[in-house]
Length: 180
Image (cartoon, rainbow, N blue to C red; front, side, top):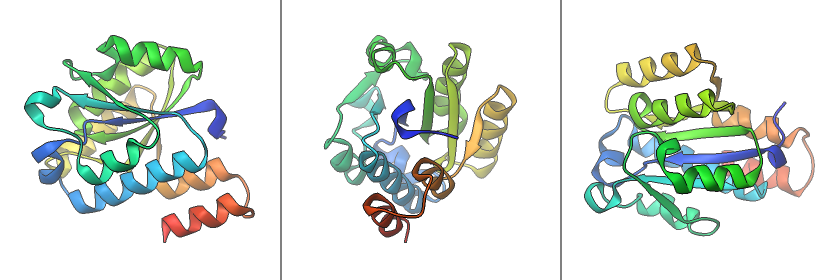
């Protein structure tokens, strides 16, 4: 079972026009919003990646506004976030080996980040309803590729209840409000 104090949430490239043209963009934004707000409820560290933001644009306003409450973006040039030195440094400084991964595009940047995380000894949980690609086939193949290499599949609601462990308390009530 995952424990919030042993995890880090990584949000990958929810930027500019691409974030608006991926499949089910509005639903994706909602799931990411829920995921980030919940991570903040758990005091979970969040690493936030942006692919060449000066060319592709900034993270969508809805997601950036809540991410700014607890973190700042890490710009990257490679498709994999692992290749950004600042990402590696911040991740290693956290001392955790469990990564919760979400964002776009599933079959490119999320996949390559996941592969590098797995190859470097990180247990990686992919939140399949908080990631997307321009086509459903690309999303599904990205999920399958990550799973073939050892990524564990979850979804926002399952993840949040796994992290919560029990159906009581103020945080539980706040999670219920986020999910509904």
